[in-house]
Length: 360
Image (tube, rainbow, N blue to C red; front, side, top):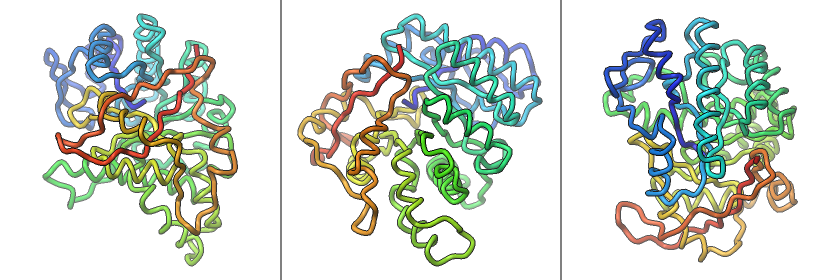
């Protein structure tokens, strides 16, 4: 999970239409709410993506479009055209290696009714879920106009990946790239906690979300939200809703620190942690080589969210709802190797790699 592509069809459209606000000078991207970056071959060339995966020890990947393609602030027609080009491009991209590649639908979320239609069309094209931004150009996903999307997502029975996008400006995060370093995990935390407070998980108990960058600050501050549910009148849901939401959440492993990953795994359960890489961006990391020997040592120890927390995983809910990305075919564990952080030796992670089911 959390592995990015920019299909050739989308790049062609961006080059033709200046209305998207993107400049592509050769392989150099600038514009569209993102710092400049190089569009390396693995963004759009399936062979290069497979080579990249092989180098990282990744057996299979579920690819999705990155935030620079979240054009939630352009016209409805432009957004729809871009999403259609992206979905067709990803479908074609993945047919080159169907045993190793699957894809998540790209949706025009500023128009929820059409986002639902686009998702339904993408399901027919073979997507195994959807990937959307945490903020829809300033609109929040817990707002009433997005309820029909959550209804459709639950009915689809496939996961929705949330990726930070359209982060709120914060003067304190400049000029050190902290809008990414701190802002992205913060944006994920805000979005998921708002969904909890608005009762989205309670209304849609079969909904499953994948959250990136190790879940932001959520796994480490959920207790604070639960406490606020007890003492603050602004929040109307009970503390139990916080812990129950963890049964519907899956977390990528991209923490850049083995101790943090160990904590995450012990507290949300190893079967709710997925390999995430953010490839091929420079803030990516993680690999099959980097996570697995430790997984073999970890056994099946189950973690806790805390002594006061309801056992949301031990009752069988999380086991029965283990991430199923469309599934009929079990993906063999891909995490191999010694967990390491910048060459340092660390104690074995308490991670057990579970097979992720991917639709054939």
